[in-house]
Length: 165
Image (tube, rainbow, N blue to C red):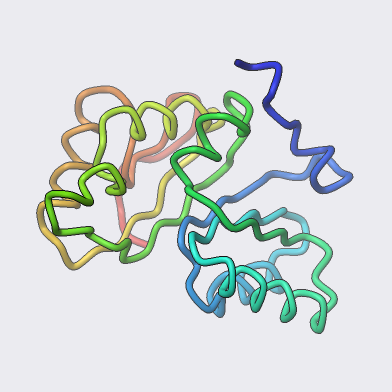
């Protein structure tokens, strides 16, 4: 399936490092990151199409050339479109827990999703995760310690370990 993966240079027109935010909501933090770090590219995946469109209006108004937003399922987009070892950082802040059993497939706490994040992280890449749900943080920590380099830990090849942002 790697033939369907899209090189970031085709998305942004340059080879700068890419950071991905999953579920940016209204996008204020994302917009601030993009404005403060013009030497990096930012790619956001927002489930709600209206929210994604609203962020893109703000991107245009602020003339941020280093930010793109797409509406869709982050699990699908990362698995099918993001190239191997190409993401400098993931940002996942307070993801929807989808507590109902029938919504289990929508949760980010899935071993296959952890594997996709690990696959796409560049050497030294890191996932920044914030949640007030202990089970979510414990899940991420479990996969980080199991060698998938998921959660606040860096992928081998980089410096550092765990910590808070």
